[in-house]
Image (cartoon, rainbow, N blue to C red; front, top):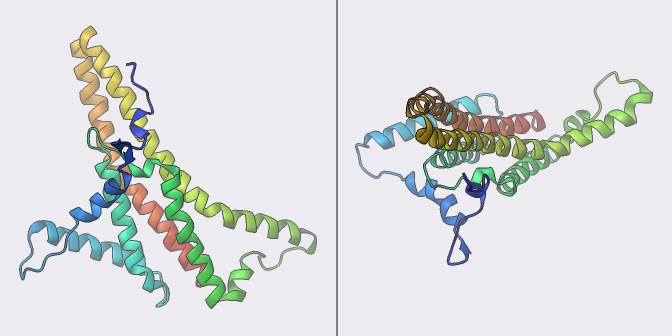
Amino acid sequence: MNENLFASFITPTMMGLPVVIIIIMLPSMMLTSSNRLLSNRFHTFQQWVVKMITKQMMSIHSPKGQTWCLMLVSLIIFIGSTNLLGLLPHTFTPTTQLSMNLGMAIPLWAGTVFLGFRHKMKSTLAHFLPQGTPIPLIPMLIIIETISLFIQPMALAVRLTANITAGHLLMHLIGGATLVLTSISPPTAMITFISILVLLTILEFAVALIQAYVFTLLVSLYLQIDNT
């Protein structure tokens, strides 16, 4: 139990060089395309997931918003696969790093805002001041709406980081407690392992996929709001 609780969140290095780029590229290397006439089950499942995500995400968008289809599908597959790979033993989860999540959130958010100002300037500016606002409240509402606009990418990144990090910490704590109980009371350790740790692992699988969906869905909603 002397291991540092946050040791699993430290960026791994090899010969003094960070290997996080290789880890980030690993999910994309696993998802390969097939040139065969008849695809195997993995590629069939991959195509089904892409079609389902595309239908779910693009049904609410205009033709201009649908040009983001490839970006959004790639985003949800990347985040989901990265989160799932991070649940394997002795692995590193890049989405626990706030800097990486901000690196994804800020460009996507800036792109949606830029498209909104470029294509529908009046509609985008109208979001800063709701119709029928009393004149004395206009300056305050404009300041509040501007702050809420700039908080959006931070909220995206912090939400993903906090949920993934909290799950990993909880699994680490319960796993350490189960290991200690093994030498004290093996039956209690077995009950803890089956009733808590296994169920928590299943929950973390669900959280990994749900957080990827929530992150991409919010980007999709920002795109819809700024282009309607």
